[in-house]
Image (cartoon, rainbow, N blue to C red; front, side, top):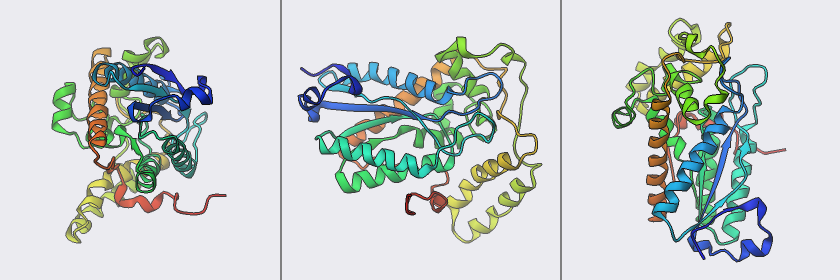
Length: 312
């Protein structure tokens, strides 16, 4: 009988074989252990990813009541984490091979869909996920739906519909000025696990990465030339690259970007709800047979991620 929420790790092989793969949606949360300022836990991204999964499960129970929901264990792994003590940075090739193996295994059992919840914007992290999505679809016609890839781009680019739906504005929507453990992510954690937000967060002022950094200025200076050469997407992605390089080379070694102190739980709930709507929309497209492809940040520079190179 369909309509159940099942934990994959708790089932035996006969129970898995007894599922109807045509009426089962698998889910998995994947995010790194990473420093999130002085006020948020190292597991913030994974905590948010599992909260998103829980909210999505509730919506799937409503909208796809004849489907079983098969929950795989949360994976604490991610690439391009904040370069600070206690962050655990995993080679993006490991993420790629993990997802390809998971997709291959589920496809071999007859399943068709895996919804991946995530909350990490590391460039090679996102590129590796998208490469795995495409490989698994091309080879097995299996759909890994990874909604955060597109959702993060909407955040970074200040998508007007997202700003309207979440009541946010540039600098508070998880964009490059609010990219890590700032107002948006602190709001999400106040909505998700308020007891894990350390006291004193209300006094944390704004930290910026940008124009004063020589690396940032050098990268941004290339935008007009790229536009002139017709590489408009690459030019559009350069601010994300400039911010990432500026962060790595910043002598202050900041552990958050943005301004946590205006955060509210209400804003966090709105952002989580918007993410779930993105996930449902992408799943619906996949179930209608459309390839589950996204264009994550820096996709035009995807050669920086090494999944195509040999893995030891």
